[in-house]
Image (cartoon, rainbow, N blue to C red):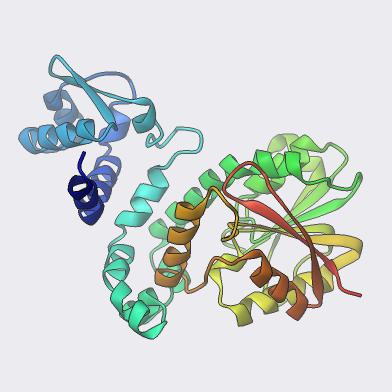
Length: 327
């Protein structure tokens, strides 16, 4: 491809997002989960127009989501990641990006760049969290996405950080507890608590029931005490003032000799520049937070009475920033 063609694909990238999200939302991807099918078979299975379905399948084949052969279409390895039952499925991500409110907020990016304000709240008059409460189906999809994304990172975090034997770990803002589950399974001497809003917080998996508690509440007010307090993709959702408030409640709950662990994208880590930069832009458009450099995380820790001791590379996009009580 020429430079011009490469640029053109970037400019019209919204078409790819819409095509993928439509195939997920209409059940087309799952309809292909059992093997190759003709466009007519797929259309009959999901109740769509046969000709339009064929045109969509052809487009998805052109970008590698599907493979075409002798008039039938099948999922590729990449396309299989969009199945709703796939481990680490990206189906919730596709549905999130196609949420009309999110889609419209990205169209409002120019407002954020001109003013520095959050695009979503400016456009819709409410923040993304209120939006998901008002639309429970979108809230459930977001929770499913967080569980899916965390499942990809959790094993690396569990293997990278030296959790103290016999310690109690709190997964702050942990949703269904995917990160906590990975840590407890990797470290049999640990116990843990998953903490999130009452309508979100997950219950213990059967194999971890004797080492797991679930607690509902707000991390702006208080969090359960523990030796290691983990926050994955929490602080990046919030501006500095709110982030410091969250970290202060964690500092207050930290047992002697314990640590606060931020599992976050760090802007100045080499090798992840594209992912980090566009995740940062996503924070500006969506929740109103930001991705940060190591120095910026150190400043947040200091403002909350903590001290950044190290940033551990996990071998994946997210690093572990460790903070301990200052002094």
